Amino acid sequence: MPARKAPSKKPSFKACRDCGALNSREASICSNCGSSNLLENWEGMIIILSEDSILASKLGINKPIAKAIRVAGKIIVK
Ligand SMILES: [Zn+2]
Image (cartoon, rainbow, N blue to C red; front, side, top):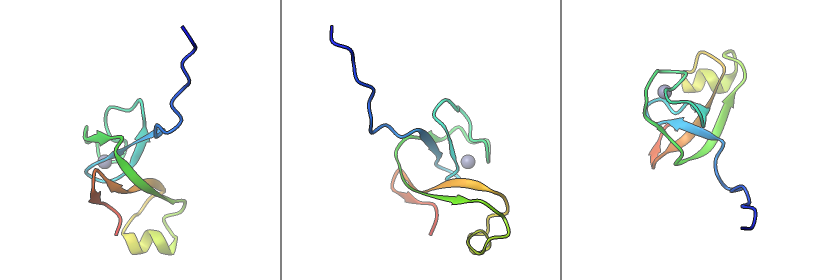
């Protein structure tokens, strides 16, 4: 059997459908809110490096976090 190539388009994160936080693919619950609603069907990404940033305050985010912009068609970050 020929060696199978690793799928290259698989996302390396799962996004929380409730809060949009990106979690590792191995995670079963969201590290941000504890939801088990983690999906690989997400698009876009924002990364908040500092809770003091303008972007964080505009989005009402108070800690460094990576979030998906859209999860399963639902817009998380407007
Ligand atoms: Zn969450």
